[in-house]
Image: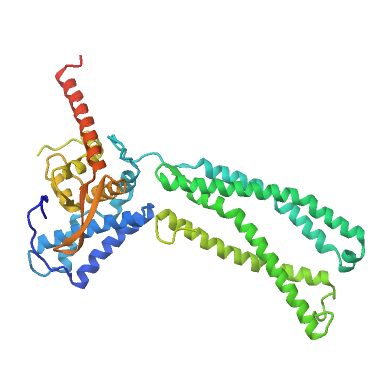
Length: 298
Length: 118
């Protein structure tokens, strides 16, 4: 190496014995885990552990001076370096200090990160959404379900009442959806700010909650409707194929209202489970994005 | 070697921490390139410094991310390839600015010792 800092080093085999390599790998994995815990990106973690790996090998080569290294040698080398936990706070301090000039004297333990104001605003919008959306929607649903098929199709008064009920609740639902969209927007801004300055801005969990809460409920509702429609259609097909007017045997009233109620109750957990599964995948991707891992995007 | 009292230790620790970036960049100024452990050893060979890997390696990663250092991956006689660091043009400019500020600060402190400021 031209113009390098050091003289040539003692040669040693590049391939370490398996147990020696495993001893070093355990330490490097522990350092990587600490860096993951403190939100360091994959590239930064890799840069740090690669350097540390090189250092361990250099120290081992200097210690063994040409002979085959043993696990005892590896452990002796590891006893001379810092424990993995030493990488915790320091890496965050260094990561957060901007390279814009003399950075001054860093504090050992700075104040804890302040919860993002955007994340808190998102929480408020979510709370307002809770008030705006479900109540009118529930009322509409109860009203529509309470109508028998005969009432709904045969009596104009009842149909008109249902239509009016739907329109009167549409406003609050739309307002609720807009509030939900604001909550999502606040959550997205909060996540960006937290990722940019993890030492100063906190509240990642709250920000993720802001982003997924309303979409979860909307997705849940849509999936419930889809499952509900599918099940009800299936029921009608069964009736047509079997030639029965009522597929339910004893113990169930032979009315469309009962059938609707049953498939609705069945669709709730199914739709909820599907939405929860999608939400879980989204949260995992968001967390991966925070850590800078591949696939960490939507 | 002069042993520090417990009162002095936190101050000197903070002082060194504030100078890590300057020391790392300055260590790279006179050489074409160097790898992490090499830099660590060079800085620690100087009196007054006792840097550790958990300080220097994340610092190197951050300076690279900020575009002040560039990395070349080259072979190592002891195993996996090494990362050789060198100053970039913005890194040299940044070092120059830091050095000026440090000189100014050093001169100011010295003037206080000399009594010039009174």
